[in-house]
Length: 349
Image 1 (cartoon, one colour):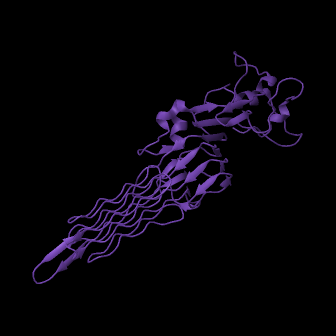
Image 2 (spheres, rainbow, N blue to C red):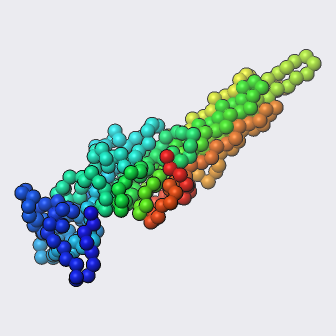
Image 3 (cartoon, helix red, strand yellow):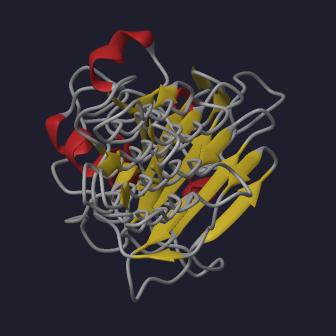
């Protein structure tokens, strides 16, 4: 837990330092104060000390004393930057990533200094989450679904810093386009986009470096409505076009074309843009299905499918770049990169 802090009336003992950061000797009974001048690197996080403000250089140029440890705490790195953990940093559709689960499991967890093992409880520790890989979202029917989330169950007074490096990417998934209306049917609505980063813990600081990205997933376009034309001799019908997929990672798929008579499917979205809606069917230039709506992308919401004799499906909502659980405090966002989408979405799953 955090070492005591205060003026000259507060003293720090060797045993307190040892209990917080671990012993520097093999016997575990003594500490060599000079050995705590640590300078380590984790991905783009370089020259990391045991805790902020502690000296890092050995020799006479950077002395260290017991008083330097006032108010300091154990620092723990959570690895979302190393290729060693590629199996746990998803780059395709599937399960989302939960920082608390990674901390508990211990895979990709590094204790700064290495003088002790990761404690079971995170009470009064500083957890540094370093993202420097591309993390994808999960297609879902709920915009609260987040590609990377802090998770719940953290012990009291856990401090967290989430650093997104210049190659770090956190993307929500794009929503699929809606199916075009079949004969005598409306088009289906598009699927919502999901979200990037979800915070369910107070006292979290998010730093996005130049080149780093946190981005919402965007909704799928609605499917076009089907058409019908009846006269004395004929009853003609035509399906609606499929909706376009939303921008995201993974991107939304294009919606299936309605039947009958030549409607086309929507196209898939991509990491950088939305998909187009497919064209409606045409039956003998008499019955026309409506076109599907374009999927959503940054600064452009998904479109609803067109109406014919039957209505088009609605374009779906977008996710947000950053979401927060209710009742949190001490959240700060320092953005030197790119955050596309809202930063104050409510609710995390």
